[in-house]
Length: 481
Ligand SMILES: *Cc1c(COP(=O)(O)O)cnc(C)c1O
Image (cartoon, rainbow, N blue to C red):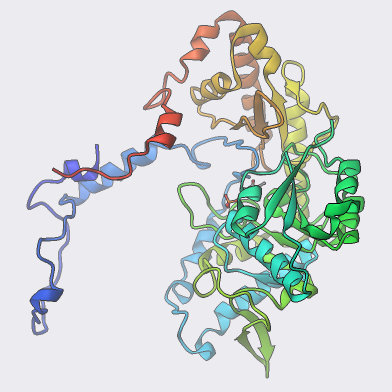
């Protein structure tokens, strides 16, 4: 039931002090003709309404959330404490810089930390999310080629295992996409890449977009050769940093030969995501791209921090400095962990994924059957579907009845009945053991009672939803009578 349907004329909970200034009536052309349509409710009913809604949703604070590629780690409370300090929440982006030195310091220190983690030279915090960061990074690459007079470099290579946002961002940036097939290990096919780059098309290549480890959770062993091939034909290499949780503090995209990266602060750096944000997808680049960065960057001048516009800035990607409070949360996380803690977080993320994969391998088939994975792994349920009629979707829905959020389904596209599991480092061994037990139980159930899984979930507020219908015919407005 919507809050508007619970509303009753005349109820409310605002207790305002009597007005002690002269009442000024606005000119009729500026005043509202009808009263503002707001729900009218007592505080207790509002409180219950939202508490009930919250109980219907599943978040990281409710239970295990192994949504591959999304890094649904626990977000420590202390991040929220710093981000809600009034010195950060009550600042205005247009107030004099003298009074904003602390906020500038947050941007500068976060930038330094991210440079150290990624091997980049400069960052912009304007992009609001990962996909927005990809778009920004591609515009940087485009600006670089145009500044070099390379107007013909309009093609970007994207492997078929890439996140869907990669090709979409490339098209938005006005580039055309060359989709390359992965090899049988799910990694970049180096020979195919070489053929493209050393052939006729080489001089039209703007660059390559890659995430490493890739979406199958595998670290590409040929990464140095790959970035060298792209540079060899004059292209730039873009790092989709959404999977940084596997390697932060251990390996750096900059050292692998990448020229620019985006990071998902709302994945790797423990700021909340889901439910529409806000997120932050800062973009870092090496020195040769820095002069094209959007917005303003911080510099030190006469012992003070100031904002400067990069020389050939590509413009604005968002107003002011992006979602600043998300940056405050990320910096808190980085400072709480320190350099050693950052590396330990990644190591434990990888350990947790390998623990689950090793245990589940007895029953489930692992895609790209690999001995060791990085922060996530992909199960291939094609055989189970053939033998029992139970699909990856059915198993995912079955997990809901056990209070576990399903893994990412049907992604990467290169695996047909894919379930992509990313436990993250913040889960205890007990939680992992319980999830393993549930997944094993569902596997057995697929053989003994497949019907029970076809109509799972049974315990959630709603069962199977018409997802295609919702996507094709979305109802985005509520019709008030
Ligand atoms: C999440 C993700 C993105 C996009 O990030 P958003 O913040 O959702 O826009 C891009 N690439 C990969 C690999 C991702 O997992």
